[in-house]
Image (cartoon, rainbow over all chains, first blue to last red; front, top):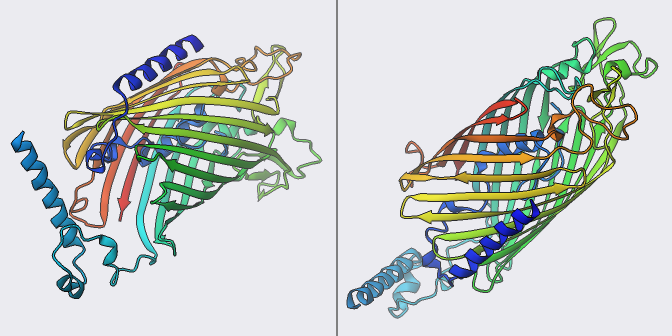
Length: 73
Length: 433
């Protein structure tokens, strides 16, 4: 699994470096500033993330909550 | 080439005229000043009160969640685990500028949940405990943003309260944009200081502890032997979670951006739940027992790409492992399609898998000689799928023509686990400005 992960990360890094980061002016960011392009969870996902963190052992690395709360039921 | 050149000049002039027209509030100053397309906006501040506090945004999020399954942790890994949950939350963002003209944002949140859980009734061995409960969760966050330096710093506090579980969270967060403003590093340090009320299954309650009581439920209602209700003074045990969250976001080009995320999480204290039963292979039952510390390391990235003019790819991957033996992969893909610039439909799919924790075994499999044991299927080996669709409406003249409501989102999702747990969730978000 770690090998698989390393391969995936290498591919991602290669892809990003191959395309290289362009210096973007503000007027070139219209698409990136679109609300759907935000690199965060949607507000409407708030409770979905809660139940997933309670039903699954893994949590975190999603800009959300990584601890606290019971989820007892 | 000439066309391109003229277009750029035309566009530039148009932008300048627009900028000039937006600043034309002080007519006296404008009439005296020489005609210039490059007049700085900062000179025109006579009528503007930057420090005034104003409501920037209000968000209302409501959800209805329904679940069915047959692996209740309260009954040792078998039994009805149906749940319904109604959640409502409000977030209010207040903004103002301080003396140094830094933007301050104060976010005040409050949430209220009401749930009904079939398994909860079986905290009592006769199934007589209350199957319902409530949770409240207020939050507060204050962030100061320095636009010139491209950084922000803030603090936050959270509280989550159920009858049998209290959680207090504090955080400190910081972000810094790169010099060209195309990248941003963020860090967040969080601490959760929780208390688990030690509500045991009724057969394990010492008679001397709960006088006149025969049933204790997770929602806190204690039925006394005379048919009345009282609340026993039940002790609690602490649980502390410390998290460091790091992320780096980078714009790759005008259509592609990526974010790398990583958390380091440590937990100490009572990490099980006192009303989770475990049935040994001898037929006897006991209370779940888990180690008092846990280390978690989730690592992930998001990659969003704007394809053409109306399709967006939102992708997510996370690898997770912890020292309880759980390893997990999460892959998510959402494809918002813009039917108009202000209305989009977003189908999504999320795949998740995990290996079992080394302390997990199903009903009747654990041995009394095991050091730790749980039959909570949260720690079982399984795969899950979550798929559905979302709709987002954000017209410039307001949703349904109501200027105050700038955004409406509805999202439905269906979730299945290979443990046979199935759930549905529908959520609504209303955004007001």
